[in-house]
Image (cartoon, rainbow, N blue to C red):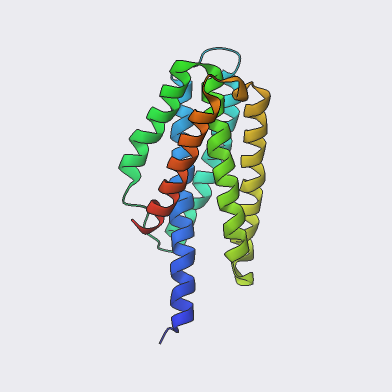
Length: 176
């Protein structure tokens, strides 16, 4: 018989993995949307960030398989919305695409920090991966800032909306 604590812990870990998988999938799709439009000197930078997100996604895909956790039912929606977010921002300007990156990576970094506080000691390998990915997300945010992301027109409005959408998505994809 499984204890209530063990089931609660397992549910928490499964939601974390499901959320992180969907989030890394969304990040990959955002960068793919940006790359469909951007052909200036920022392209190489975005490609490098995309490769990083692909590695994160591969890890969480493996976690889903290893732990027999189902992926989010919202992945088809994430597929379309995340690409549209990246594509739409990039259509406005490269600075707008970078502003999107700043906003998304800030929320994800905070989300990973919250997860690190909740993970039990026996989840050290998962904690280590999340800590590493948190650092990489913060680096993406720094890169996007260096690439003039904060000069985007309506920066504060744009990033506020994106952050709110990301926080909402994080809550939703873990359960659905």
